[in-house]
Length: 284
Image (cartoon, rainbow, N blue to C red):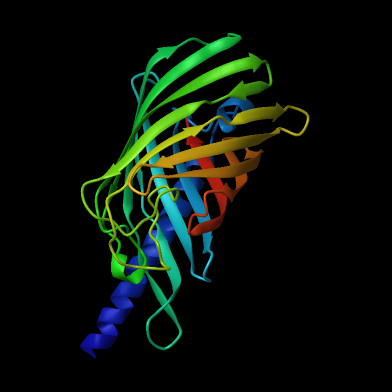
């Protein structure tokens, strides 16, 4: 009886975990203003928002995992500061050393974010905003089951908003990611866990550059972006190149949806394809 009660309590916790973002959506959409396309298409938005990401990661040797990642981000002091966090609920499939494929389900690594905008100038052609960013990932997921990196990860960086035309904006970005010890993650994988070989290897030291170009399509109330992402792994002394595409659309007064596909081009990383679907609900 006690075991049954424990299982029921766990099921209730999981249901509450998934229902919270939906309840927040209902609250945020009531009486909301109209969302501007420039805010919706901004990958470094400083507006408060709730997000729901559905993610799929595939690797070369049949390993894969899926994640549902709710998050919340809160803007402070006239859109100069933003703090947030997200945590994935993951289903991992990896090649074990015994009876074939092994499936595991549970929470992954908690991700915390902070953005600071020291420079911001509205409605200009040229450099519109400069942002300092810091992502910190806590090892809350079990790395031996392919759900976490097994180490604290830190990722400081700088992101520029550069408008070259009214409907075309570049977001050049440089970031450096490092871990506080050995991690279950590979260079070029942005710190995500490696279910192909769920053991800690070496520490991460990744320098990454990206140059996404976002084209806003007013007639469709949506946007499209193309991004070439380069990563240098100092630990593995290897270069990685990825191509990333995004397509998104405003779907409500203060909400939007987008689809992102990331495919490796060169460098032979374990990670092959990443597909991410996102729902974002803004708060004014």
